Length: 78
Length: 361
Image (cartoon, rainbow over all chains, first blue to last red; front, side, top):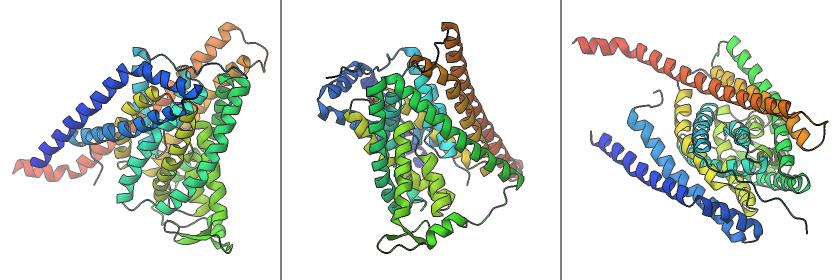
């Protein structure tokens, strides 16, 4: 039972973190669009923003979805 | 100095966001099921929402490479990954990405974003026709054979490749259990990268190349492809991001849906026979091919390569192309869900007598 509880706790923690990330993405969406324009105009270092975000989102949201389906009982055969 | 049109990142209206989430989810499901990036659905889908070809490819890559890393680590735990082969192919693929990306940027500079639309679509049509046709044929043969489990054995071509010894270039790969010259691995990696930079799907070359040319078992080839996808995807994304072509908002919205879908697709494969996976893959590829084919005249018209189309015809073509793409997604998602539900039901039925007995007691 404690395994199940830990699983649900994981779903909640990563779910909340994921929701926070997407909320921030929504609020800063115009800024991100501008960052890409700035890269085009010569501020090359800003190219790290999308690359860094891709890693962070994948890790957090990936951990959430992985735990989400397991918690719902959808598992591979065997 | 030439003046370029500003990069056209689409506005994220609620309709766009919800549509992207759904498309991402279904594409994720497809990619989890057939072991390929799902980008062959996503790139055309993004383009149907009005995203320029170059931005669609760049953003797709950015959502794919960290996902590939996560999946590669997972499958490495099952011993399916040949890390050495993956990294070596990935490095050569990087060179292919560089050439492919420069070519794409040249096209954009010369013809504008519509040039990249036409280029991406044309490559899609050719690649999907060849690979989709091949996969479909393989699926039909697999069904006829009744899917007798065959022991893995390298094909004729792979045996020949493994038999060639070029001093100073031979490397041992565990997935092949043989030494192969780097001079064979290099062009395969390069071609994978070239295709990846062009349409964001490199696996269409990488996986068959590892199976049929080098002689790797299918399960190791698809797992090792994840390493290749990560190495070249990260490099490619950086190159595109360096020119400001990655729309990270778009990439992350798609990621939101696709990570949910990937899990369902991957679980689905454990309940079905291999030829079913190939049928679904072939069917989706051929329908997506049709969708891009219908759109080609519109791009040709925009570039002035053909006599102008009437406004009515253009909107009909746009509409039919979009509906065809939706059809591909519905067919793919439907087939996977049906296979999954049937598989789970059969699995439960097999174990039911025991459960019933347990309940009766």
